[in-house]
Image (cartoon, rainbow, N blue to C red; front, side, top):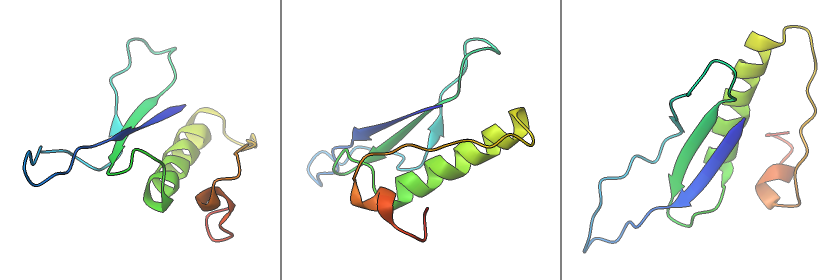
Amino acid sequence: MSVHVHKANADEASSPRVCYSLQDAPRTSHRCWPRYYWWTETGYSNLETFEAAVGSFSEEWITHNPGVHALLFGDQLGVYRRPDIV
């Protein structure tokens, strides 16, 4: 699964209409992995994006791999180390 976080220009002057929620990208075939896109004001992952990504991954993993455990590796970003998320 891929989650891409992009910076959204949220200036009042230009005021683009941006959806800040996790968006599923269309799959080109049944064998390709899921790709999701998220827009934040900073362009970086935060609590909301990480929580949604882990939730989407869990649903996808359980559907395709029932009874098999997955390991999640992350870097030292503060949101990845929160006990309530882990």
